[in-house]
Image (cartoon, rainbow, N blue to C red; front, side, top):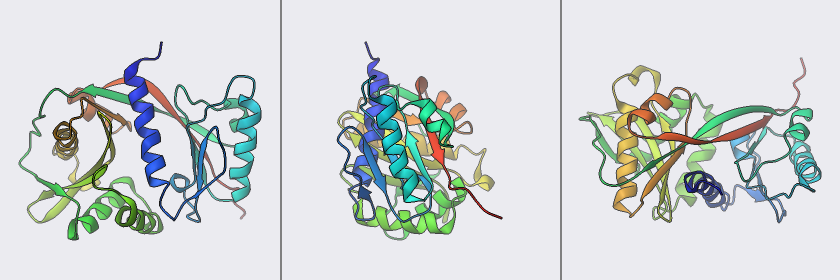
Length: 257
């Protein structure tokens, strides 16, 4: 029997991509048993496969068919795998995709979480949206063309009833950011980033707590996220525990000198 905590991690991640994938920037591949999206943005996060529902008999064949379509698109792309939505590992690795495993983490929400910080944390609207994009870019080391494309999607397609982004402020200086997607009773935490010069001051903890509290306020009973190595100790201190592994397979076109 599948752990319901793992199901929450999977379902929220899939919901996030399906919501974002409705934006006109994305083209949906016509596949019934998997969600696949492409754009003209040459960055893997913008060209994605997720939620594979292949049976054992067809897994290798369907993985190859979908992967070949994505490779033919010619831009970097990624395949988000989940415990119940696994592609064929061999098929992807033989096509040059590199695999990295990300912890899927979960915590029950039974009341407000103390942020342990005097930082002001506010929704990213108006000028705050520019600050959010700046924190996202600097915190994750994203190139300008990625943040420019993401800013268009955020402004156009992030439904505030489902997705809310926050910025942490130290006075008038932005120091961190994060987003939450509410899917039923699950709050999914994404985009939690702190630029290097602001790390070690509790910014990530405060942003995570604020996102969890948004979830509590909207009736969520659990929070989930996929953790980086840098963020994991912060999330564990706030109560998250790993419940599954979320593999990521990434493909880049060959470069020529």
